[in-house]
Image (cartoon, rainbow, N blue to C red; front, side, top):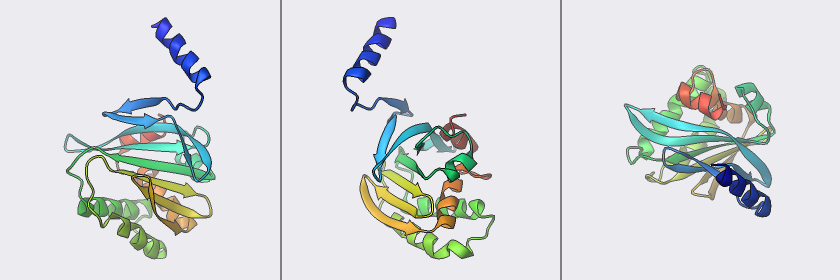
Length: 186
């Protein structure tokens, strides 16, 4: 074990461009990402499950470790990545879950950000399949850039929208409490 640790450390020192990863529910989750020209570190990752089925691995990336939702919201940039692990997720189910998430995140007061929500929901019109990856890069006072399988889909402006999106996974009524805790490294 000591030899393995020494080799891992030596490899990391010799090859600094290599990003070590951890495995969560069969998905390799990168320790670091560079998004929007900003280096981000993995804050935490966990599994979203329903009825004893793993649906996706959610991971949170931030510039510096964050243990609270407020810290993530205050960060200049943060990213949430979803790796789809189930073929049970369809476009319709994803849109329904995100709609519910926005309702919980805003205490059923989505009127002020409804145009942004509509634009965001349009990103899920195409088929979703196991193996797809969604990344939502949130930038304070700018909005959210959405990627599907590393292809930029859109940037949706608005600070209220950005905060509501983060709260879908990290708010008082998150998509799943255990996933929130895992993403916050708790």
